[in-house]
Amino acid sequence: MQAFLKLGKDAGFDMACFLELQSDFHRHGLDTMPLVNSFPDDFVEAYISQNFLAIDPVVECAFHRVMPYRWRQVGELKPLTPGETHYLQQLDDAGIVDGVAVPLFGPNGTIGFAGFGMQRGRVDLTHEEMLMLQHKAFHLYTTYLDQGDQPIQPHLSPREREVLSWVAAGKSNTVIADILKISDHTVDSLLRRAYRKLNVTTRTAAVIRAVQWGLIGIS
Image: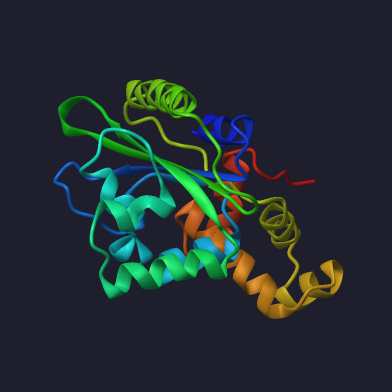
């Protein structure tokens, strides 16, 4: 999964994501599908909390196209609803200026989606380079499918790991905020993001899960 992030970076993109979509051609909640990404945390939090998946035209086109396409082309590929236009505006507001979507179709109706975004400039890939990107992404996707039901290691940001390390040391949110020189609200937000990524609901469970994955240590 982390190789998708490296693939985007090697291709000159600022961020990348991978989704495993549902094979019944409907978009479901992100809490039920594997997700790895290097998009800005604030944007990811908004994407999940506001269920942008339901109005994301970039993902919608992946159900119906075989070849890669630029995000800014979706208005030419399908009529946009007001909700979809609103979502594209959210991309602009987040400073995500362009990107490439790569549909990934596997065996038995499996569907994957690889997205590669940019915060500066515009996508300047030739047709051949787009095909090569798709070829590499498909190779990673089939490798992922071959792993079966093996668990996927969560990806925590350095700041999320730092906060969890202090939680493991028994520090309260207020004390952690003082140590890191950030607000209590920011500490709470970082913890909620970590909970979601680790699929837990309590501080203790988050620490245990993070230690199990080797994401933090306990001294």
